[in-house]
Image 1: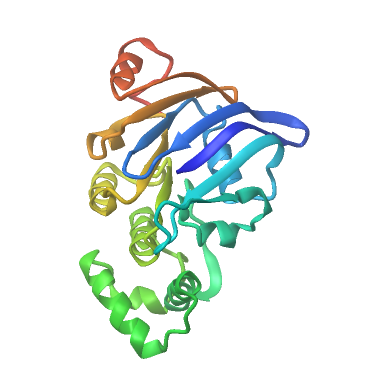
Image 2: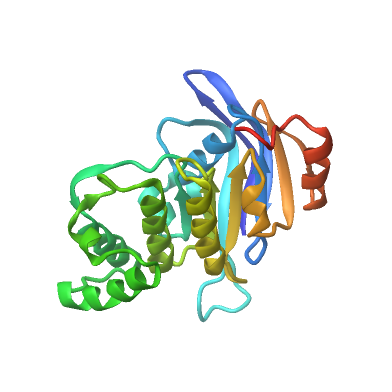
Length: 254
């Protein structure tokens, strides 16, 4: 379980997350909904350890049941951990806006994150045998492996590369931060269908959005509504239908 208790966060001395408590349990999916500026993306960045976000009050921990140690849970405080250390504890954020990184080849980036996850040093040929089937499965040209990371990639291609990362890293807590950004209707449908295939009983999707199209493909167990950094309502998926009919979110336009 990934657990947040009384989390408060500031940026430039302005409170953007105010006393939030949430629990994310493996095997269940969650949706965090709110207007732009409500604190949704800030919450994901805080959990991942972005240095811009200053935590003023919190308990943020992950509970792990290590292999071979039945009945014993390790509670890890994430505050003391750098982002790469949090990633090794199975936390993954699919960014709203995926950056281009010049000078780093996609192949080497993927191999480095694979080795970091497994504490290994994989040879070029060995990793080639691992990555090529994933690229073929997602219908991504092998030529992309020789290109700089995301440079010149379309929105759909960048999202497919994130799915490759999901398959390589097998994270447990997966934050999908408004992944419709930069995608046309057809690309969005294709990408979400691929992502849905990654979802299973040993991971948890936390879907951050202010529209609802993604929920046609990925069902959720619990919904949180954020406004001005606070949880103003929560419930099960039935809450989505109520919001569509009565609440503040414009589901036709972003």
